[in-house]
Image 1 (spheres, rainbow, N blue to C red):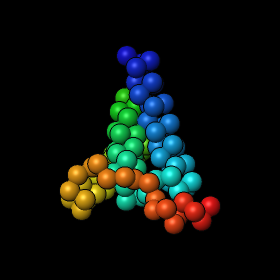
Image 2: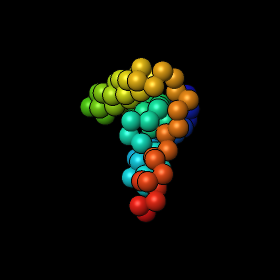
Image 3: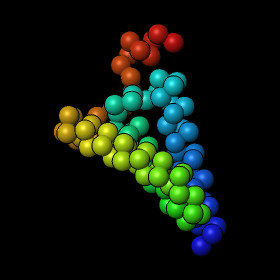
Image 4: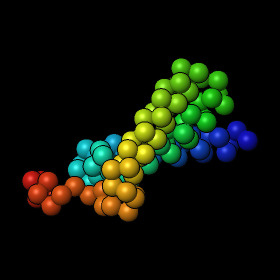
Length: 97
């Protein structure tokens, strides 16, 4: 069980860092469904990992992170009507680079 929880934690870490890197590189929008979903799943994975380890301050942080991701994803879905809309920045933003 320890190995599985560790793998879940590493996957969550990679997902959160990848989401942030893609946002910084303007490959994703902060308001996009994919970015919000990556934060939601990454936060949940790290919540499970840190709670299992008894690291309660980190678990609390990841619970909030998960909640923010869930709220963002629900807001995105409510605004766009579905999650199938592209998360890529508009062409003008891509051309600025």
